[in-house]
Length: 168
Image (tube, rainbow, N blue to C red):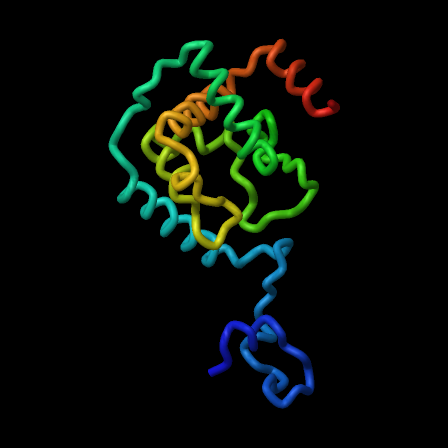
């Protein structure tokens, strides 16, 4: 059975890659969308994995201006490049991701604090979500969770400041 290199380096007519091989049917492009059943299955497995392994914990930090500022700083440095300054999922990279980057102002808000914390710490395999647990302490991560919770409630002044930061 061909290995990963074989699947990624298919060349028609090459002796190691016979025509009509299973890799012909696969589109590994980040712009391709999987079938509905594949999407549903992947989402269910991911959501159950997060729910089963995340801590059943509320954020130990209060939503004070100081804590929000700390969370915003960390978020802006490490998260906004993919999720957008406002959590909209509009990447600063101008690139397509599949699976798509989470819109932090949408369904993510239905997750518990512990689930959001778990995802930030561990990342999500086979997506573009990296793990931050090895290089950030729990206080930094919990403050990022505070900021993620705050994103749907951004004030007009906060949005104006974000626009200024975008064009600096």
